[in-house]
Image (cartoon, rainbow, N blue to C red; front, side):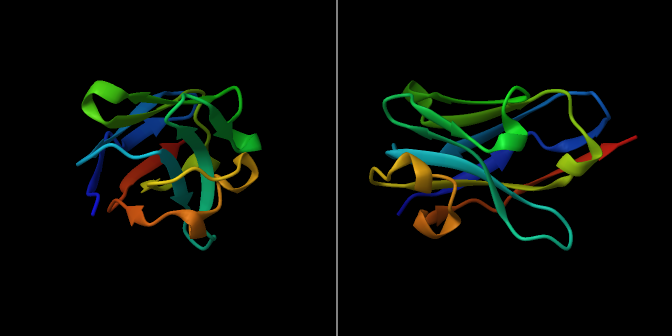
Length: 123
């Protein structure tokens, strides 16, 4: 069993930045960030594998950076140039195995989830 705890959400104005953190209770092979906006389906944001390789959703490329501090089993998501459409609940997820890159932003693969942290971007 892996426990995940997100932090770092909050309210920010358009163009601002936030850094989300996710503390894991143990090391995992693949970790990712997902988000769910009001009235929308959950979508993958970014994923990172134990070897450091990353996968990003198109909307996240160039603005968001996923990273992992292995010594602390902590996952981060640095979000810059935030837009109102980035407003959502952000969730950390993990799985204990490798999955092909094209599947890393699909929620069905992930066995462990955090409770989420709210991000609100206002204009």
